[in-house]
Image (tube, rainbow, N blue to C red; front, side, top):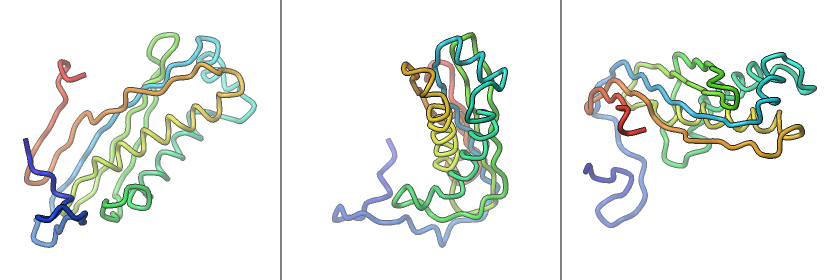
Length: 161
C-alpha cells in the first residue's frame, strides 16, 4: 500500500509538492452509472424532458466541473486541462453509463478531474429528471484507467468492478 501523500510527517494536511516531477502526458478515464425508471430513460432518449436535452446539459456540466476540480477538492492542484470528453451510453432499459476522459501534459495526474466530471454529469441527470422520477440512484463511480507519471499505467480489471 502506498503512503498517504497529502499528510506531512506530523500528520498535517499539505498539497503535494510536484516541482521536481517530470512533465508527462496524463490521461484518466472514469465511469459512473445512473439508474432510472425505464420511462425516464425513454424520455431522455426522445429529448422530451421540459428542462432540455439531458445528455448535452450534463455533458457541459461535467466539462465545467472538471475544470473547477481544484475549487471543489481541497488539495488538488489547479490544472489547465487540454481535453475533457464525456460520453453517455444507455445500458439496458434502466441505466445510463457516463464515461469521462481527461488529458493534459503536466506534473500531476487528472484522476480527480475525470471522477469529478462523471460525478457532476450524473448529478445533473438527477437534477433534470427528478421531477418525473423520484427513485433515481447514482453509482458506482470509479476510475477506469490512468496513464502517465511515475506510477505508470492502471487499468481497472473486471474483478475490481
